[in-house]
Image 1: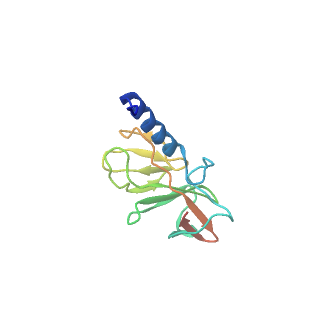
Image 2: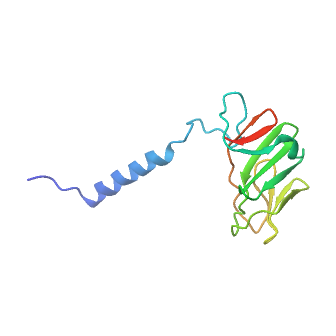
Image 3: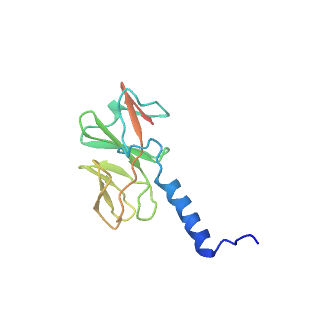
Length: 137
């Protein structure tokens, strides 16, 4: 007689498989969402570095990405979809990424919530900067 798998065994095996799949990452190093440097491979061009003001940013509505430059030469990218109710953020001013749907504001340095009603930060996007070109990684 062949032993039958119990419900507990099936659940444990499924959970272990899901955990193993969820723990992996594309690069395995847990790096921050913004990646710059010579090793980075260039993807779709998003913007010219000259188009992103220092201390501000640019909303790329068609790509649904916002690119910021908190300090000169330090570029960051985030989803432009507000985590409150999925509106596309409107603009970047005074050090904040602003959603005019309900007034949420996010910090240009890390996408964290500066003012609600949003409670979750904007997800980061991986980018590379090559010369004057900002690209998806």
